[in-house]
Image 1: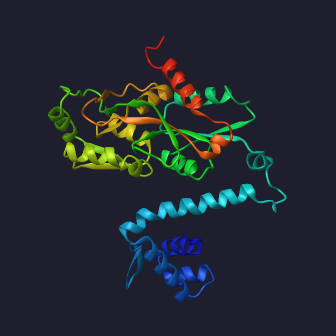
Image 2: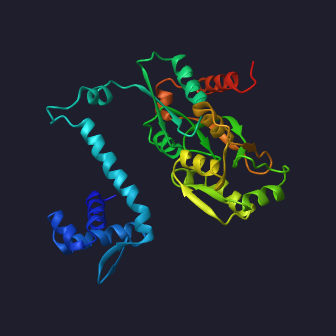
Image 3: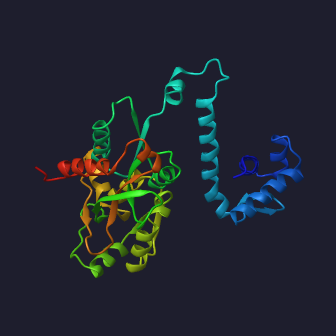
Amino acid sequence: MDLEALHSFLAVAKHRSISKAAAGLYVTQPTMSQRLRRLEESLGFALFERGWTGVVLTPQGSYFLPYAATLIRDLSNASAVLGTKDPARPRSFDEVAGHPHKVMFGVDNWLSERSVRAVVSSALGSYGADEFRVTSRPATTLIDLLELNQLDAGLFYSTEPAHPFHTEVIGTEDMALVHPPGTVLEEHSAPALTELLSRYRFVLFDNPVLTHHARITTTLIETYEISRFHVVDDYRTMHALIRLGECISVVPAGVVLADRERCGTDLPATPLPGLLPEINVTVGISDAGRDHGVTEEFARSIARSLDAEAPGAG
């Protein structure tokens, strides 16, 4: 994506004026307008509405803006860590960017702490602590990095039947209904679930969860006729809305377990086997990972670790 166009978009949103944004970036107004037009054409939607009072963001532009700002900030942060011109460059930057190659493992940041322990334990079974690194990212990012051979192996929730790299499904999880204190699912049936869902606004997660779990979310919305929503991008916000009796939601059962591990929450959660599709817990291994000695045994080791720590195990 054209970075100049993104900077231009953010400048116009800030100043609410194409001419002021152009002056701030030291370009002509026609150049600024051309950049915006190219960006809108590449995206397939309008970013601004233009009128006598200036320019304002369209609903699509408002949604797109945080992604553009985050991308620019992330690139700036990466440049700061990798750059060598600043004499006051912190030593910590060198520790992050200047190390020799390490085997890279990824964990879906929606998975529980015991999933992280399983990955670290399995990595320590084959590598020294100085030979690998574990990163926590959204599942969509892990999948991209595996496909690009920039991650050796990753553990993530998966709803897709196939990926362009080797995968091992090491388990499945039911989806779980997370509901306000004092409420119960009267019976394990579709009509009872539909009735309970109809009483509250449904917490719908924004990206990256929205696109990655689109198949399950679409099935849920269509099957149970959900029509009222509250959109969030953070599990803690969902937690607060449900605890205060305003909302209800459905998440993988392991997410509930992770929440209880982190903060001991007693928010009611009811597994929904048979009422919604299960979600796979998958280990992906890239071609680069195979070159670095990561094999199917790594996936089996994670599975054994998770089984050993499962509630009620041993």
